[in-house]
Length: 502
Image (cartoon, rainbow, N blue to C red; front, top):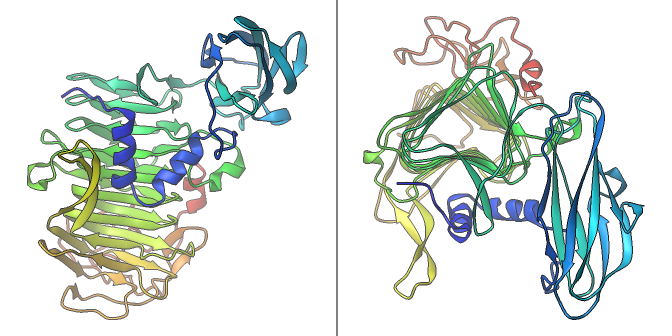
């Protein structure tokens, strides 16, 4: 079935398939600098609502574009015009022969128009120049607050720009039905708004590829679409926000997420991936078929999902397997598993961010939005069994109340088993077999180096027979494997080097 969603449906899905922080984060990303308490009229008409500078520069350059601002009314309009980025902007505007960043009291006669000239100054040799240089021009008075978007290519990359619109949602289909698309690592890929893999389409991403996503955008694998990410230990694949300045490395809500819907055709596989600085790192959730027995798996191997604003991994009505993965420093939850089958092997879930919720949660329900008989949206609970099998894994952090929790409603079961795991939890019951509640003694909690110190209780404490012979960094595991994503080595890899891949 071909991808098509109106914006209202998407926002309802994001609100309810997302998690509590998702919608405010997205709305904050999308808002203008108008007073949100006022009601405005769109009295102006623009010859273009987005000014695109689609030239790839190789040296410091300037380029100028223009657009018309039209007053279609029978009365003159007096407005203020300003660059949202002010004097810190990469742009400069010219109105009525005057150059600057802000112009007050500009009059547009009735049924007339003015030209606005926009100049972009781009330095592609500066490594901090964003791949997408964006800003907006605001037009306002007491009754009007409208804007024109400015977009320029800051550095050389493959740019995915929206060519479809549904309501206020803009997207580009990067793999159509029965089409295989490959993203190579010759230069970065930059997504503006949403990149979509359609039903029966496939996206393959080569080792060492860097994917940068502009604010509020993401990668959406629509139902029965397929994603194959082929990172390696030496050449992981990076998904991150497109702002490269050092300040933005700790900005945890630069983009939306990787969203994978249900599939009955082929497993989605992500190998050696780093996902960072999103609202939700990875979301695996069904949008129509909630019976997970019909679904293929999403398999994530040797990957790091960290520094996300809401949830690291969100799985709803999903079949998810994770091996040798690190999920860390996500601001709300690290991993949420609601209805479905979940297998975690040699996974390190670590959170020392001062969070209030447990790092890992498994539940037998989630809420979705449906249309009732009156054609109105209403929220209902989808209830189904949740089955979690967690082996040789660590779930630990600085939350005194514990780092694992459950959420249940009547009508379905929550089945979970922890074998040879380290879990921060006050009491263990029959669900916990050969488990420990001890500090795993990571090398450095606050620098997110979750290699093990030589005195760690995780060393040689794992169960055998899982068939996982190497750790997240590709190092051999011995006959008695260590618990967690990292096998103990006396001289561990400096994880700051891996995190600095941008």
